[in-house]
Length: 469
Ligand code: HEM
View (cartoon, rainbow, N blue to C red):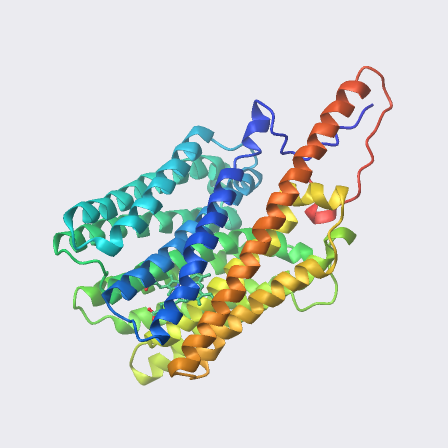
């Protein structure tokens, strides 16, 4: 019998069309990163070093954060989740049209917010900013409806990875709702900068509610097997879920009370510590420090970037726990400078690096590329080195207490490294996509020639956990 050697992402019709569901998300995310978030990441510290820190700088910093978290990381993660959620839910992507609608709402929303906020002191731009937030809310509601229906069987069955992924989606809706309310109030007072307490809460929910929960759901299922660890027990998965979601509820709920002027700082700090504990529990199941790996030969160069990603996740957990315990003992809060550094270690070391490494492991474009023309070994190491450099310059240098111009120029250099890494990754993705499409065309021709006869079989290279699916 002829064997169907296609990676499961044929750009054809019917169910196969859904296999390309991630593409528009991935392209748009990379554009937001290169032209928006990372470009501002270089520009912001340079402007600060030149002494130009005014209201427009603060608005630009908030736009940088939003474009990075929702435009780059958010869209990328949502795109890849359209491929992973069906595997977790054991079926197909439910209502793909909702995902299509979600993409356009998110795109319009992100562009409108970025265009409106800097000039929100004027009514038309304020309306644009609020309209953007409303479109973003509509987009996430559409997306989460599809994801919820896709994951439903596993959620009902209590599978921790599906629960974690879905809870990340719920936090996505929470932050988008708060965004609509607070940006509307901002528009009414004619300002372009969100109050720092509200802004800090939004950013924390986006990072640790949305991105961390989804990352934990994917990681719990994939990483232990990459490093030859046994699959974590359901009880362990439930412990991670409970401490992460409990911590987030305390963190977010306490922060809302503090915003309303009610004393609840201790609850916030306990919540932050619990989130750190959840991260440490999670990484204890991964075994990233072990020598043994179960990567297929062609994917082995990606073990190093994945280890670096998980080491950064461990550091994020340690820093959150340590800072939380120290703040609790002192009876105060974790300083905003420290939280900013921890967030950037997570943003660059875990999310950006995780996106670059995991995309190469699980996206069908890179799987076809490995099959047709295995990439050079140094590629994964070079990208990861640039990103680890960016983490050191943006996260660790400020954490070490370096201040003044040295801190700002170090951040700008980190921004350049991050921008270069993500732009290079974008080029690699484009190239892999071309290879993938050419490969699929060849397979389609081969199938039409081989099917009438029997016995023809396209040679496949064994791909292990990263093989074309
Ligand atoms: C090396 C690369 C980066 C540099 C140089 C950089 C730089 C900055 C700077 C200067 C700020 C303003 C901090 C302040 O208000 O004092 C900031 C805030 C922020 N950054 Fe980054 N960043 C980088 C990467 C990232 C990445 C990859 C993400 C997310 C995926 C991210 C998300 C944020 C967020 C959420 C904020 C807070 C914005 C707000 O106040 O609302 N950054 N960043």
